[in-house]
Amino acid sequence: MTQVENAKKNHITGLVRQVAKRDGVTCKYIMDGLKKGTIVIPANRLRKIKTPCAIGKGLHTKINANIGTSPYRGSIAQELKKLDICVKYYADTVMDLSTGKGLNRVREAILKESPLPVGTVPLYEIAVSRRERGSSFYNASSGEIFDVIEKQAREGVDFFTIHAGVTRKVISVLKKHRRIAGIVSRGGALIAEWMRKNKKENPLFENFGRVISIAKEYDITLSLGDGLRPGSVCDATDKPQIEELKILGRLARQARAEDVQVVVEGPGHVPIDQIEKNMKLQQKLCDNAPFYVLGPLVTDIAPGYDHISSVIGATLAGFHGADFLCYVTPAEHLSIPTLEDVKNGLIAYKIAAHSADIAKGIKGAIDWDRRISVLRRKRDWKGHISSSIDPEMAEKIHRRFRTESKDVCTMCGEYCPLKISEKM
Image 1 (cartoon, rainbow, N blue to C red):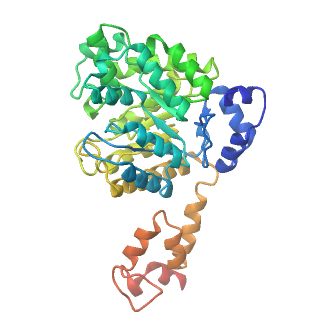
Image 2 (image 1 turned 180 degrees about the vertical axis):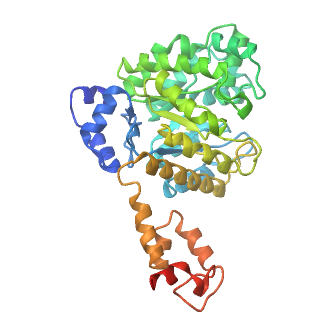
Image 3 (image 1 turned 60 degrees about the vertical axis):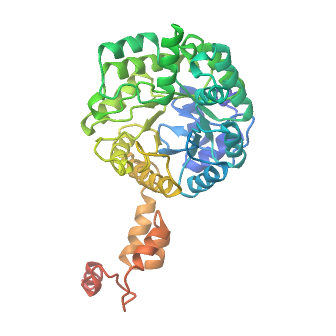
């Protein structure tokens, strides 16, 4: 049985107990969310996950980290190092988005080593394997697409991004309402071009019942990909984006009716003043399915700093209802991320997720802040640093300049306001 089916029978699984304890909620709360479709637990029934997580309403905001090779860079060893960083620096899930040679071996290694849920975009494997055979993704048959989805399901992938919302109707809307950035989703662009070359409807949409059947057999969570997400703040909340979102809402209801877990993916580039509207719109059209957003970036001017421009949007999105944040690194729009980029992206997104949780009043979220504030007031440097989000960086900066006093830092010295106010 799927997790949803178990919940409907009021059967508390070990997985439900694990995630409920982690989020500080009751098993009943998790099961009620599974029944309504407002909570998901990405966990393939064939794979034992050491650190599972629940994603959805009333829970701590979760973070996904994308790793994987590109056609130009990457190796299994390098991606496993990135995985270690993801585990250390607060990722709740990882996605293997490899598009380089040996893609299957990379995924196999990540699935074997990851204590976190693992997601993929199955279309990438088809594109890469076709290229390696001197062919093209656009020559792939509908049957081949579903064969790869089922193969990855058997391997233990916990959640799939499925670009089923890129339909002929949505593409016709896109043609009428031209964008600056067009289609910026790799999966969305691949399936759109497949449709154009083959003069057929999107097979993932046309045969969505088959997608549901595979997901149900392995209890895989479907992440309905936003192939028409805006790639420029100038394109945000336009008609193609909204038209696709309406379709994703219908597909989400179809999957839920079969007791399959679903999250819906959201926009990538959105000005600050449109973020709340986007979050509320998704909740309305998708019946409060967990919302998975990339950023969103609130400005396009900051290549090299897009972990900052996106984390602003991520914090607001989390506050207004996003449940699942996909991190952005400093390398976004420029290159495949390094180990340091992965760390910086995750630290930024942990700050965003935690800040959103405080504002949403998530149980226990502010306790961390209270603890570190007391240590800061006492000028307990060891405790203050060890309790921080990145103790290594905090220690490095604290030791940057020497001071004779162990009671104050080199910013204020004896003019430390905490020390002065202590006498009052």
